[in-house]
Image (cartoon, rainbow, N blue to C red; front, side, top):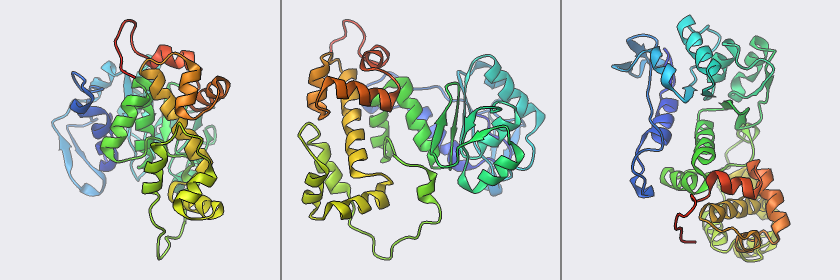
Length: 319
């Protein structure tokens, strides 16, 4: 991760928390990734001078990286230094994956990596980004954009969304869900940045949906409907819909479908090969529906998902 002058400490913390810490609760021999911070100068003053970062490697460290992370900073109209831009370009040119967090997309655009590509940035900076980089296909209403070798996250908290997505892509849904539980953060948030823009906070918030969600997650294999959820919450379906929109930024049906697909992916990862069994146990009904929804949510067919994330041949897995 490149830490430049003025970098936001929150995003540095997100990267070290998501990617750098060991996860002994997962039973793994070591951390999911090896994280190295690097700076263009021996001392880097963080955003608002909260602290000064010293004692980390220089930009040559990017030459060994499989993934380069570029966090954001508030002075986006100020050009990045030539050394930082060169480090970003050469890292991408040799085939490494590049991630930007929040307004880090300005640096990627300035380096020329986003020309003709889709990308996102914080909604407050969308107009400025368009003015400075009209050649980029900006998508301001999403939490993150995956362009394969380049991934961009929106606001600072969306760095968590993108980070968990990357963990899921690299290590599977089971690991990503475990990390999200450790962080007490949703493994997947439907919706986009629009839901966070100029939204008034109610004076008396509704009761949390947490107990209802936990109840439903224990019964995903049952024929649950939105009407069942509403009945459990003792509200009308219309009221439940409003509460889901307000608290989660999605609909009850979309949330239920997403949870069922996540469960189906976990079953596949654990070694279940019979698609009809996976469909029944996850509440998706039929193998055909399972195929369609897994492909829609992950971009992979169930068989391709199994090849990428399933247990190794001969490995004993308890389902």
